[in-house]
Structure formats: structure tokens, C-alpha cells
Amino acid sequence: MTQSASPNDSDMVSIRVSRATQKKLKKLKKENMTYDDVISQMVDDETWDVEKLDADLDKIEKKSKFYSFEEVFKGV
Image (cartoon, rainbow, N blue to C red; front, top):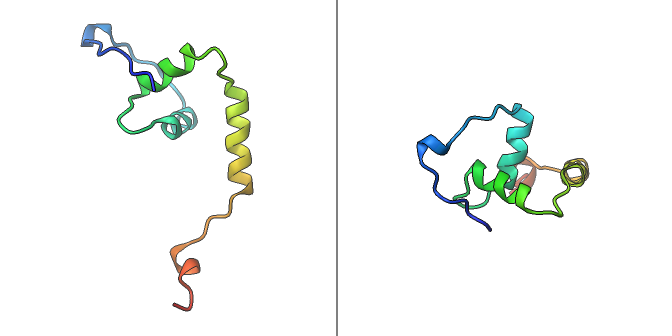
């Protein structure tokens, strides 16, 4: 994981993203990563394929079955 340098406040800018994009970025965060770290890692990685990642995430969501607590422990 590549951590970005600690920028001071004068080096920071705001970027508007949709809530859907924010959710996707949040899924990519690990441990104490910031959104800046995630985006920096993405743009530094020459093999980054956003469309493939998005398709993979959609595939996982479609194929996954999520169970409620009650379903998992029914009859226990």
C-alpha cells in the first residue's frame, strides 16, 4: 500500500464525487487509508482498470446472498 505524503492544508483541494463513487472508494480503503491514499494508488497504478473493478464488484453483489441474523440462527 502506497501512502501519500502528509500534505499540509494549503496543498489540499476538494473534489466532488457522487455518493455512488464515494461508496466505491470506501470499499477500496484499507486500515487507516484516506481517500487521497486510495485515489493516489489508483492513478499511480498503470494497470488500474476502473471498468473491470466496477464490473467485478457488480458481479460479486449479484452472485452473493446475504442472510439476516434471524435466518442464520433460525431454530437455534
